[in-house]
Length: 245
Image (tube, rainbow, N blue to C red; front, side, top):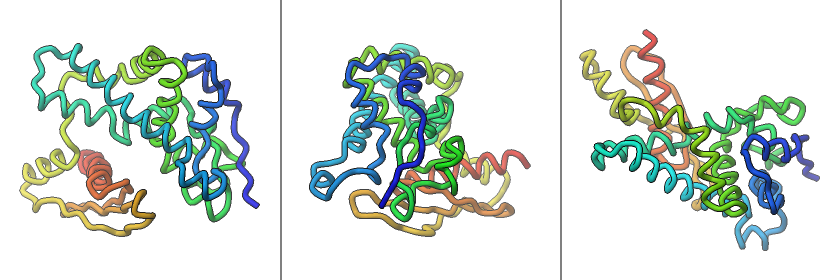
């Protein structure tokens, strides 16, 4: 029998989101990982969590795009695209999710069906759940719930509060792979290399573990929902590593 780990009261999370839910079930659904979903028939119809995740991704993208359009009237399409990509990627979502302590509210199955838990004993130590591989997905699901319950206004308020710091950067951030390549070339080194370590998961929800390496440094690994996403994650980690030297 699968039993969920102890989590905090979702009402406390709603306070951090700055929204009082008229339909609290929406927030409950956004915090209930598919590992706790019901029978196979309900899975065929699509878990509420995954549907909210899909919606939240689009809502976040739209609000950030509009915000960039207004905040940078002289920026061209390419510059806005770079900023947008940096603000809606999984790392950006993970940072915000960690900031609001989202991992302490997500309900997950224990045992073999809870492979998404990266920290052992997470049920006893909720704070360790901030390292969940699925934290960005949960953040998108919560944004989807905010939108359905309070419309664009509720989602807008939350996103503008927590993304304010990052949207105000003076320059459009470089793509991690581009930044790593430019660093290697600037130091007279061969181009960075990327290797697929593992490819797992079903066809509709694949997971890739990619290893990035550059001469003179230990390789790093990162996981993503696509090779491109995993490569970016690995490149970002390696950029941080090489710049410390």
